[in-house]
Image (tube, rainbow, N blue to C red; front, side, top):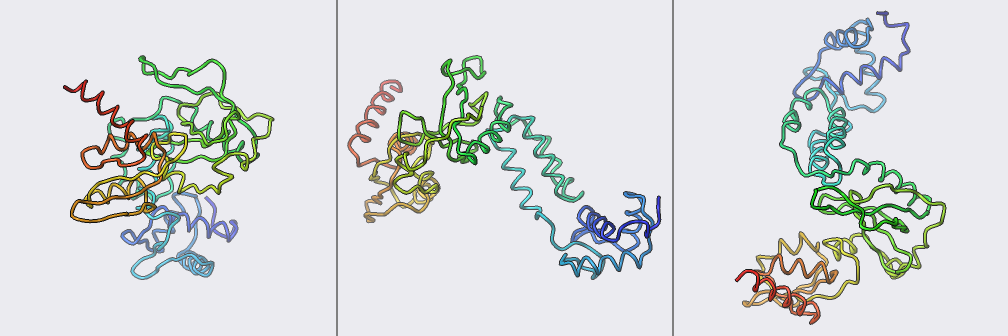
Length: 329
């Protein structure tokens, strides 16, 4: 232990701030004497109540929001409890991370809260095993892809799918070589938006299905040579049109439905669709969407929505329904 005076003043300020971050909030206020004892217990520093008072005044002068009414506590922290809980839940329900990766990341996020927050999220570790990826390379893949996108270089990787043994197996022997442009999250999974050289459209690759990701020396194809980027790319528009992350062209789709489906329409397509007609017979709306994705959306909501146009999509749904009718007779 050493008395205050040997230590740098700025260091003591930061230690007191650390104590306030860990031990105080509006429901748990500290006295000057409690802070003195915590300095001694946690850091082996001895100081007086007046020293604590002076340093808290200095911290307030530095811009930290500290209340001294009815006890001392830090009024604002790096993260509110609700913000931390949302971050933890997003990790917990991520299907991209492996179970062990999710557990480690949750522990790190918990460390950003005070000791009272830890008690509130104890039950997280006791939740039943949720669906997580078996691919333990995901975080490494994320780093490599970030670097490749930043440096404008191609990447190679093995792209996998699950077999009947519930394990990942390569779709083909040779690696995919892709121009990487952006990563996005959709329905609990991470995707790479890229381009395969022989085509001029954007393709999607799930990070949890990628292994042995490597950044290549070869420069990536310029974005202006990819059709969607050349036409003026918008990520929100792209995500709204590719609800199941299928690649391919988007089409204008006309749907007959009811006003009770408005919530589902907004959930899936945002607010970027038009109501063409509204009457006692229901709604007719127009939305731009990837044709394959819209087929599966229409089958999912077939009881509540009818595809009117385009004819190619309507015929494809008819064929699927005819097959299903044969199977479910």
